Length: 176
Image (cartoon, rainbow, N blue to C red):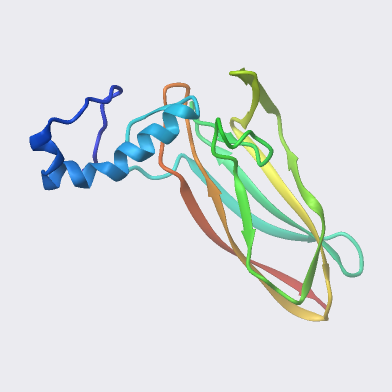
């Protein structure tokens, strides 16, 4: 069971402003407004994410590894690039926990067919079907290193967006 919002906001009456139901909807209305400004209308409902994530590491050289986050996206959904304009879409964000055992090399690389759309003079960048985010790291010590963090993203279609989602991850690097 979920909450659905209409595609049109209605000014609440004075009696509604004091109503507990109206107060409980404020958070949903705020989400609606954010999505509307980002070029999406929003219908809020409980649904499994249309994005499947896989995490892996790959040795490149003696102490250099790639961490890979691969998103498989169900059609008609898309997710935004890490480089998308944050005023129009919710860019995918990779947040790593602090870890003295690794040093980041460069920024996150995106591998996939990026689509661009001009929206109010800004470029909106997003992916359909599949995208891989790759971060190179230098491992500063031998042995097992666990890299933990979270992915933040927002799945959207041409007509609506789901609320911002979060996916926790742990990636093992075995630097032997």
